[in-house]
Image 1 (cartoon, rainbow over the protein chains, first blue to last red):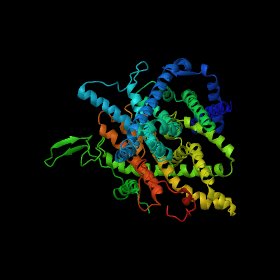
Image 2 (image 1 turned 45 degrees about the vertical axis):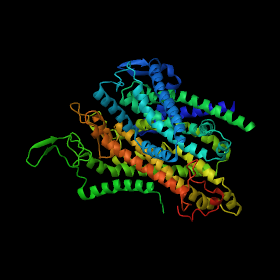
Image 3 (image 1 turned 45 degrees about the horizontal axis):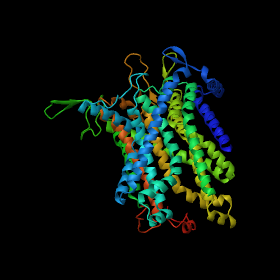
Image 4 (image 1 turned 60 degrees about the vertical axis):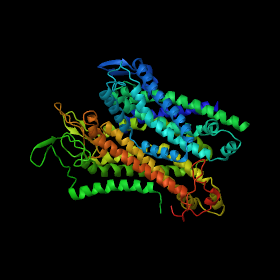
Length: 285
Length: 340
């Protein structure tokens, strides 16, 4: 019960800070503090009465909630898909890497440091160019490079773009954490008992590193939401951040960000709750 | 003395960029050469702008014939110095915020505050920065049809630095605060307190020497983050120091950066990605190199911290890490006397 109360508090604070921040452009434009508070009042009113909020679409006033659901789900699919694929691939490759000999591991780590420093814009540009190049050479269009409108949905390209860097981050973090874990004495003990190395890795080491990875994944997600805006603008995808960017009003910014944050917030709350439960059980035993 | 070669490689890359950029301004007055048509020795036309990358133009030229490598060289000092400054401000400011957080708040309140501040993990930085910075940086059109900026040049730079700093202070402050609190829990702090050390003495003699090396690593990470945000802002045509927008309804020029700083180059040339990929990629690759340099500095410094007590490295075959440092002994070293 106390956990639930705390989570609500946290969600409430997130929403409040989003609203406070979204009023800032107004403050900067008018250099007037009272205008800022007026704007915040307007934003707050709009967020509370979200079902009555309107926006301009091709010169017509339309209800915000009527139009937002399908782009919203589309954006969420892309984000969740990219996050899940990046995580699973990184986990599998970590297992593969850790049973390799030492010099390969060190090479992998050096390559990862290099890959980590690729700016995301460069990754998007390279993906774009690669698709065009493949099309020119073989005539096979892997996927559309840009969607043509609100109805045209592309999935592969944005997911691949969003996935590459988080994959590298996860991979590197997992290797570092697992190597630290492998140095502990219980691993030596279980190896001495004759357990297979791969079994110790998958069952024990992974379980013990999972909490660190979970906390790390928050900052990866933070990075991915920023990237989502970039991907949607570059590939002309009509997702939720595209609406946000083309409208550019504080109300829209606040409403879209809140919508985007809630599912991830719930997901993380669920994970955290499970981790607390599991670790408590461990203590009792 | 730092022995890690990674550290020195990174530092060399950065200083070469910055010093050559200043040298370029000093000796050549930052004069970017423009070559629109190229002739061979017999006065035959052999090409026109844009040129592909070659020995003569290492990064090619843009469609107007300006040499991109020289533009990059001219802009390096603005971008890199801004990044370093923002990184320093972020760490410094968060460190100041973290002091009362670690010293004066009781454990329970600190944990709660930490939980609340972690809600900032869900507020994506680029999106907020794009929204807040665009009224500052974009040139506006007044009712009389005149172009103007809302703020002067120095105000624009100052505000951009302040905003990019303040947006991360809640997260970074709580992170540094937790690091500091875990230093305060060490046994030697208790020992110092028992011997009668004041808070100030504990802070200057024990906490600062323990925190400084960690802060260097945090600073490198922050610089990387700032560089990435600069590429994003560049793509959204928000250039450091102001975006010059042409409001001419007929044949408007594309938005221009006031100096040739790198995010401006990224924003201006990204549109060329399909026609002349090398024009678009050049500045972004420069960003990549700068990020790699910061990354190398951070990693090299971390290696240095882990191995500074050893004459010769011994590697554990199973885990691949160095033998664990003997924590007990380390805690009683005088950290401010040992070379960082």
